Image 1 (spheres, rainbow, N blue to C red):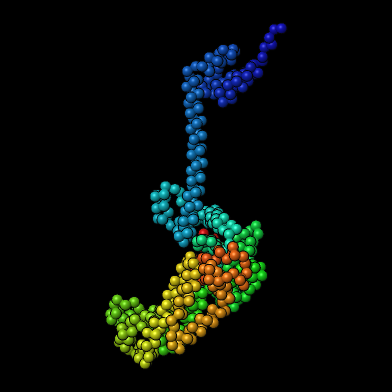
Image 2 (tube, rainbow, N blue to C red; image 1 turned 90 degrees about the vertical axis):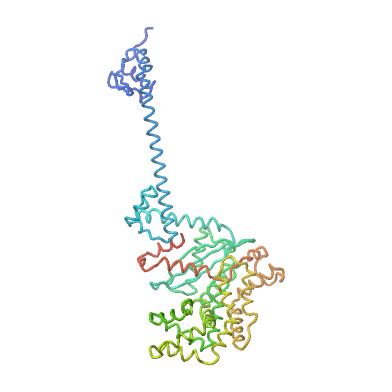
Length: 486
C-alpha cells in the first residue's frame, strides 16, 4: 500500500515533540526555531536535521542554556538572600530584646544608617520586628524551656510586687533538679493579678505549670515551692499541696534572716536614731555634702538603709562603727539650728554607750549580713546553704544576742518546709535515717542542690523594673512579658 502522506500540521508537531517546545514552535504551516529566531524548511526531515546540526543553532543553543542556568542561579541566590534577611531580622530583634534596647531605636536615622553600612543589610522597621518576629522568638524561647525541662523534677518560686503603675505583678521562676549538679533556672511566666491573695497565687501556679507542660501537668515532678513568708503565700502552699503531693513549701531563708536583722534594729534605738538623722542631713543638701567631702575626701557618704533592702541597716551600723570619729567631727561642724535632723544627730551621737553598741553590732551581727549576701548566690549545695544560716547565730552573746537568737528560732519554727530540707540534707550526708519523710529515696537525691531562697524571682523583678523605665510606660503588659522572658 502506498504511504499515507502526513498533513502539514501533524508533521510540524512531530518536530516540536521530537526536539522540544523550547526549540521549535509552529505558526500555521511554518516551523519556527526559537533559538535562531528564523523559519526552518520543514519539507523534509533532512532539512530540519541539518539546521539542528548547524554551527549557528549549536552556538545559539549554548547561549540559551547558559541564560537558563544563570536565571536559575539568580533565583536560588535571591531565595538565599531572602532567607538570610529573615534570619538577620530575627537575630537583630532577639539581640535588641536581650540587651533591653527599645526596638524604636531602629527608627533613629543615624543609628539605622550605621547598621546598614556596617552590616550590609537592610534594617527593618520597628513595626516589622514587633509584628513579625517578637512572637516567634518568644515561642522559640518557651519551646526551648519546655525541651530542657521535659520530664525533669523541678522547683518553683513565686513572688509578687507592685510596679510603678500600681499593678500587682507576679513572676514565676522554675528550676530543674539534677542529682549531681545544679540545674537550669528560667523565668517561666509573669502575670498581672487583680489582687494578691492565696487564691490568685494558687491559680497562677497551676496556670504556669500548664504553660510548662501543655500536654498535661506532671504533678509528681514538682518537688519544691519557694516563696516569702506572707500569710497568703503560706496558705497557697497548703492549698497546692493537695494537688502536688510530693511538693515541699519553703519560705525564703533570706527573707527570714532579714526579719531577724530587723530585730537587731529594734534592740538599739539610739543607733537607729543616729543612722536615721544623719541620712536626712545629707539628702539634697549640696553645702553639707561639700563639708563632708572636704573633711573626709576618701570616705563614702553615710549609707541610706532601706527597710525592705536585706541587711542594709546592719551594714549602716557597721559603717558608723568603723568611721565614728570622722562622722562625729563632721556632724558638729554643721549648724544645729539649720535643720532638725542636725540637732537630732548631735544630741544622739554623744549619748553614752553608743560606740559600745556599734562595736557590739559589728562583732555579733556582721556575719548575718555576710550570710544574706552569700545566700544570694546561685547553685549553692543545700548542705552549704544550711551551714551558712546556722553559723550566723553560733556565737551570739549578751541579752540582745539572746533576743535575736529567739527571733531566729521563731522564724525557723514557722518554716516547716525548711525543717524538711534539713532532714533531707542529713539523709544525703548519712547523718539521718530515712523516716517521717514523704516521697521516695530516689526523689530525695534530687535535693542536693535545692535552693532555700526566692532570690531568683527578686532578680526578675529588677529586670522588670529596668524594662519598664520612665520612657517606656506605654509598653503593653503582654509585650512586657515576652521581652522579659526572652
